[in-house]
Structure formats: structure tokens, C-alpha cells
Amino acid sequence: MPDDDPEPAEPTDRAEPTDRAESTAPTASVLRDPTAIEDLDDWGPIPDTIEGDSHTAGTILHEGPDGESECGIWTCTPGYWKCTVERDEFCHFLEGTATYTHENGTVIEVEPGTVAFFPDGWTGTCRVHETVRKVYMCR
Image (cartoon, rainbow, N blue to C red; front, side, top):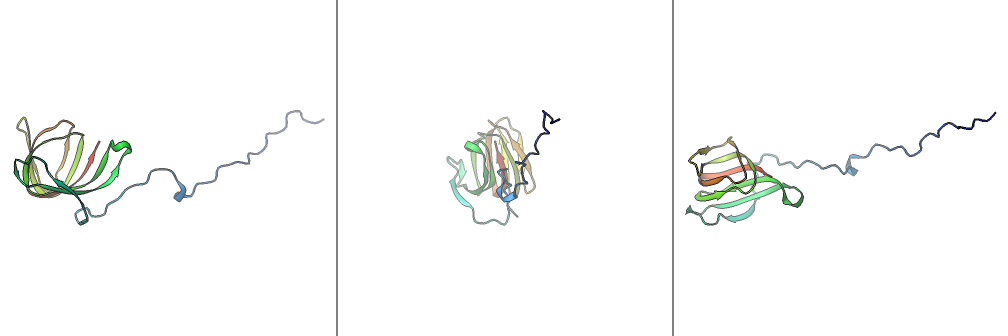
């Protein structure tokens, strides 16, 4: 007597492993030895300096959707200015020296190897003594 409920058919549309080159997953962005990179984009002078003529340059390693986040390298020549941080910013300073002074008087002395986090809305002054170079991430 024939079976009224046949065995299920073996699936024929099995997914094959995807070649990595065809993956839609995000890839990593990498900069090797960020202190040696000399081909930086000119980002212009710091507006409204109090003292000196600070000039910035850098390169963006990654920018998130709609510019909501970014990371890269930033350099700045000596000078002094008032600054307000407009987005949370994590920094790892690689070269140079600077002094960041919060409007409440708290001082952050920056030298190579300094890691700092400046929250959105941080307000104070920045005095670059020797050209600084940092890797940063803003969100």
C-alpha cells in the first residue's frame, strides 16, 4: 500500500559558503605607523586663534553613515585658541606637546602616549607647544 505522506524531499537550495571577496560585511580600515604618514590633507588654520597661527592637517580613516562618526589622524602646529568639542572624541596623542585647560580650570598636559576622552560640550582652551599628531575617533 502506498504511503499517503511521502518523505520530505531533500532540500536542493542549500546555501554554499560565500567567498570572502563577495561578503557584504564591513571591512576593517587600517593605517600602518600613523607617525610616518606624511601625505595628509590640508584642513586649514584654526579659526579665531588667540595667539599664533595654528594650522591643521589630517586624513580620515573611516566615516560612518551620515557622518555620525569618524576616525583618522589629525595634526596641528603651535598656537593657542578657545575650543568647544562638538562630539564625543577619543584621542591618542602620538607626537608633540599641548595643554588643554577646561573652563573650570582642570588642566590636561598632552605628550606622546597620552590618551584622552573629551565629551561633547567640553569647553576650554588648547595651547599647542610642539606640533601634535593624534589618532582620533569622534561620535
